[in-house]
Structures are given as C-alpha cells and as structure tokens.
Amino acid sequence: MAMPNVSTVLGTAYLNEIRSKILEIKNKLPFLVNIEPKDKKSYNKMGSKSVSFVEAALRIAKSQPEVIPAGLKVDEFEKDVNLTVALSDLAALIDPLCEAVRDTLTVVGSEAMSLSNMVYGHVKVSSKSDANLDEAKRTLGQRYERQGKKKSVQKPA
Image (cartoon, rainbow, N blue to C red; front, side, top):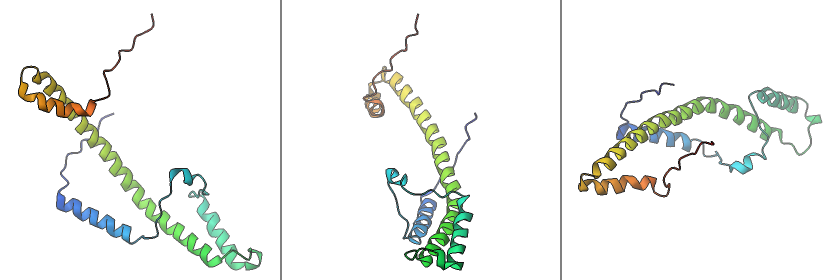
C-alpha cells in the first residue's frame, strides 16, 4: 500500500476561517446533544432502511388519528421525523469530511512520527560523540520513557 503524499501548509488565517465557519455551523444547531457511548446502546437504531418506515408511520398517524394512542403527540412525532431527515442529510455531507480529516491526520501524523523517530535515532547516535546533543536526546527520549526496552521474542526450539 502506497502512502498518499500530503504536502501542504494550512496557514493560520485560513485555519481560523475554517474554525469560524465550523463554530458558525455548530451555533446554528444549538439543540445537538452528546450521549455517552454506554448510553447509546439503549436507543433504538434508525438506519437508512428505517426512514421509509418512519415516514409511513407518520403518514398513518396523521391520516388515521383514531388508531393512535391518546398520549402520542403527532405534531411532536412529525418534528422528530422532519429533524431526522434533515440531520441525515447533514450527516451525509459531514461524515465523509470528518473521515477525510481523520484519514489525512493519520497519514501526516504517521509521516511526522516516522521522521521524528529518524531524527531521534540520529541524535542518539550523534550524542555519543557530541555532548551538546545530550539535552536534545533527553527531550526527545521523554516520548519513550516507561516503555522499557523491547524484549526479544524467543522462538520455540
């Protein structure tokens, strides 16, 4: 698998503009909630195949109110259905963007770590003959403290 080459600069002004637009979108959706992962299991799941079921249930609830339980508020049900459809449309736009941001972060983060490990390796070797690099070696070495040395795996005889 060839790693994609991502080489660009995301300038401060451009990044601030993006942040501002994301915050603007977030502020336009003040009703959004966050649920704990353990709590998500208790909610009914609604996949793409359920949309037509929910829309049909709403149509029936509106056209045949006599079969609906007295406590069911059809107007609130309709709000839930409409919001579900609207948020599904937004999620269809946002999810691929979030995935692309995460994937790009994985690629550039991996490259940055690989290059940092290379620098650290060279600093460790060079510090043996240049005491001026001891501080740099300690600074970079903090990343690997408490990991200990890798144990060699012995193959069974």
